[in-house]
Image 1 (cartoon, rainbow over the protein chains, first blue to last red):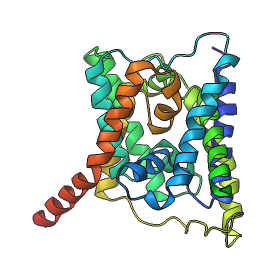
Image 2 (image 1 turned 30 degrees about the vertical axis):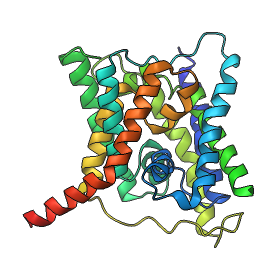
Image 3 (image 1 turned 45 degrees about the vertical axis):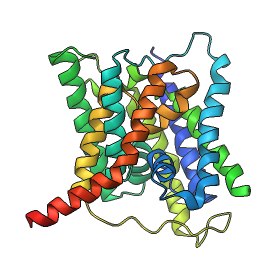
Length: 142
Length: 146
């Protein structure tokens, strides 16, 4: 538990290096919601192979790393399917309306001092904090 | 082909980082957002750690005309905070807080996320599918109000 922040930092450096690689080699901004969303609403079909390859790596590599962990890894996602569906819809619609999520606006936007990236991060952190406070401490749903 | 290969590698490193950092663990994400409960600062280290190499990369990118594979590099950030950015980010944040998953980790954890993970992804895909139409409606409504 005390080591968590070190793993957070190491993992963060890996995430940032992946984004740096994607920018400097492929010339693209690494935004998860944009890469997925472009395939779903067809706006990104011109670069479908690059997008699918990214998603394939995103799924395959962490899955292949699971045996490195002694304890069983879990996402600890709530079993309340109503909450899961509502959350998924909100994340899907919200990230596409805002044109970015934690990776695109958060990592790639803040690091270039983009006003939109910083603004988006402030708003999604505010809403996220409020959602947890309301649904956990006030209503006890999650 | 080369583009896809490096794309696969970037996606893989991104996924590995999400797993290592704890971003695929919804308890850690909700613990970070839970400022009035047992607050968990780990995600600050994740975001800080991720921003550092990217700041260097943006710095390098401004001094080059093209990427290593000869692609044009993204233009300098412009644009302002508009209505869709605010509404979208508020919706995204609410969903992120509710489930503790954002798009990257939701995809990365599909191999071990169980039924709930699949349901979340399907709902997220559905949301992404209707988003362009919703954006159009919002824009039309805003025009009518003007």
